[in-house]
Length: 319
Ligand code: XMP
Image (cartoon, rainbow, N blue to C red; front, side, top):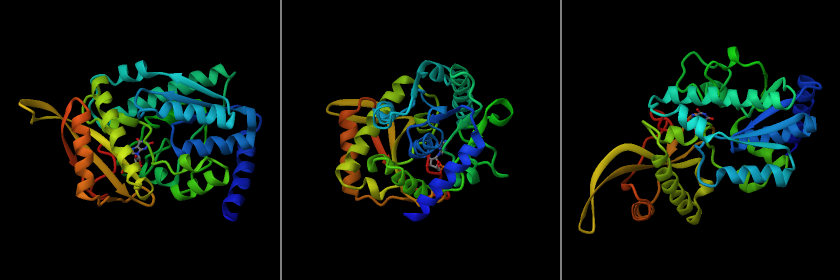
């Protein structure tokens, strides 16, 4: 794609001009955007870049390992893997408000990035994969629109507090363009085609209080759901699909026993840029099969529901 080839060259020139001989820290979230930003910046400035992957304990099953191996082994880009599960989960203990969750997570991310910036002898810049829709919806770090729907994890007062300046080479792009750029940069198709995953991770898919037990249940249900979506060949038709663990218990019956367990909601939407979305019209037989597997295989869930809300009026995430 010639436009992406041109964009790549221009972006590299701009990054070099902005950064000069300073050092840059790039936060990797496990998603496509930050990965593409990192590979692009690495191409521009090589060893001046250090990537930081923060495991906040809110990743999906297996996600952390996939990202770490892609960068360390496939790209040979220096990557610091920060195990910060206890810090994040500790700070989120008892927090139920969605915006407080995002701000708590955003603040801790900045703390980690600043600490890592010191370790590399002082990085003047923080890079991130902010896209155009993030800027518009203020699903971004750097400010945003007059009406904030969700303030974004990367946020909470970042501009005032942080010493580093931002490098955001994807700020003008939409998701499909970032994917095209990722292909242009040679990222594997399996990675480029990934569904978006929000920075605050499972914290915003666990409405109400977050506990290790709930996260564990959520991961198991989510894994089964995505496995069935892939097996049915539907992954690439869907913009995003995930499980949500509701903070509600309902009564059920299994064999001769009464059960009293959590409700799991399944979400899947189609979208072009995440700003509007339609719920995905699965076959009811498919939903039934996923529900049966989750209830049989995941202890702690005895009821599964499917979310048929589009955006607007819903949002894609539940918080
Ligand atoms: P909503 O829920 O606002 O989501 O319809 C639109 C897209 O943005 C993602 N999202 C986030 N991404 N930090 C992120 O990095 C956040 O705080 C955040 N909130 C929502 C969401 O997964 C969807 O792709």
